[in-house]
Length: 86
Image (cartoon, rainbow, N blue to C red; front, side, top):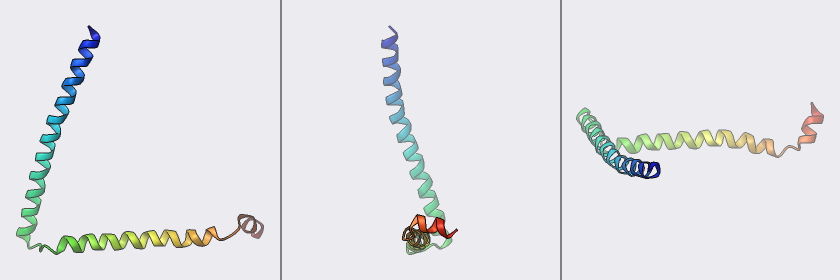
């Protein structure tokens, strides 16, 4: 009997999840549409998002290079030599 109850609860949970995902998806689409309309009314042009994403991409590349270059330089040093130097 308890196995049947757990099976029924799991089935309800699976179908309830699908319904809530649909509701969440429709709510997110409505929110994004409202934000898009608000930004267009403010004067945002279609090229602005490309500029924003380009800026973020450049900043990510620069930050990765800022981490990678010193790390690569450090990898070239022999650990025993570095310990003896100190």
